[in-house]
Image: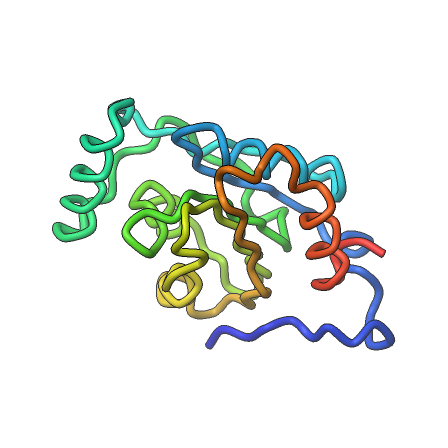
Length: 177
């Protein structure tokens, strides 16, 4: 069963001082990559880009149609690389663009390839109005034995100037002091 992290500052030290951190992200347009890099500057840890073997088209409408079809068919595309030492991470920040009100299927594939039992998953997404959608619920379905932290959503047009919002969120969820 997924749980939300406690936000009481007196209960425990910041997560980043007691855990090994991985920032894994999927980015199509570069927006999610920008937020992943901002998070990395704040919390450190390792960073990993989720890349599909077959790249997505650059045309917006083609990407939308492909994303919808993949979701409908529950098709999880093959990924190019893997995290070799996933067991060493206790906290995994997972970033993605909100596609069809949820995680893109490459992220679903990534989450289904590893055992996240007992790990803390920290979602963050970029969007153009749909915010987190049902992505956190869908992550919890794929990783039912993990702890799910409060997520961050950033509008794609605001990613270049999101440093303050990212830092405030990281403090709120106790990733930094």
